[in-house]
Image 1 (spheres, rainbow, N blue to C red):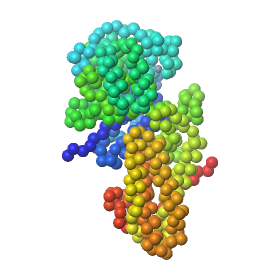
Image 2: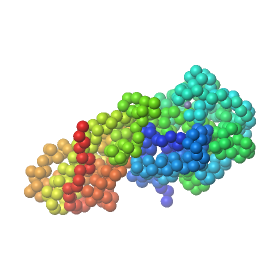
Image 3: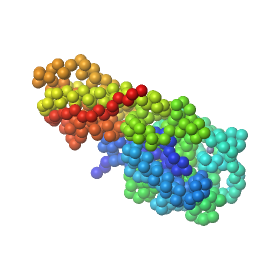
Length: 489
Ligand code: ZN
């Protein structure tokens, strides 16, 4: 049995603070991809998790008067609950403080150490605790972090370095030649630009940070948290076991635009040094702003995803983020825009179509045989939709589904089935056709809106029948409560 396999990961989140909409967007995008691949018959491994080590966690725990482990244990409950609320179908949730992870990390860094790619030296430079990253003076914003605008810390300590510069040429060539390695194109150019400047080796140890994985050959040091974190992609598939052999290289790492360098250059070089193939695609999504402004504590405009789900439901939040936020650029969250989308696309669009078909079915009261005279057209819609999903164009794939919904709306108004309820043959033909199209719409909706998809298939009595067997099935339809009751403005 050689089933097609697909490995997708999100970035593992840093649990110093609660999640914002950007975290949610990434998980929902990844979930849509994973569900789409499963729909296509792939054996999918979908991993997420938490990056629990490092100075930042150590300090946050201190502030909260907790031990770091206690602090991350609590935060992990919050994160797991949030992903459950968003109906994320991940197969693994890896925490970097788990023993299985520590083992894999030590194997990988030992391998790199034995290869001679790690040497001891002295590190002197700037460090941002919020990024957990080193900065060269020229990249700093007058001594401040260019991302966090907080003062960078001077670090001067003995350190172990990874010979990253040794792999610079190979990484550059790989990024340039493999057109899908970094997506989208503008992000790829950004990294190639940075790679054409002088590059230093990477300090991979911290001497005074206790909250980390000790270096296997020198317990006085802990491993730089980023190296620890990146290796999670191997831990989740049980490196170096059977699952690893089956699923590596990863098909997609989904990440935010602030950590492309880490995933392409640092992770790429580490893998080359360890003699492992590079992931196939690093897909970079943009950031989410709120009502046109960057979300921040000081502006008090941070949107709590849990409240949003409680107010509008999981599928509405999933739909809005996938439909409204461009997959490759920054996008804006606006509650008014969400309400507009809800009323026009969900209450009016899919919700109304489902209600109309069910009402007609109930009015007719007898079995309807599912049929199709437009299978070619449906296939064409599926082809467009699949291609858009494969290219991570979630917004376009939803637009494709909604154009099929409009097709049905027009079909209903053109054919006027309510006038033909006594013409058995004609009515059967119209409704049978509509049920078939609506079933296909429900399947296409399943990656973005899994609960809505299930509901529609259940209403159509198709939930337990595979699509190949839909034609000639006979179903009796009944009215159901509205999928998306209209919201008042
Ligand atoms: Zn920073």
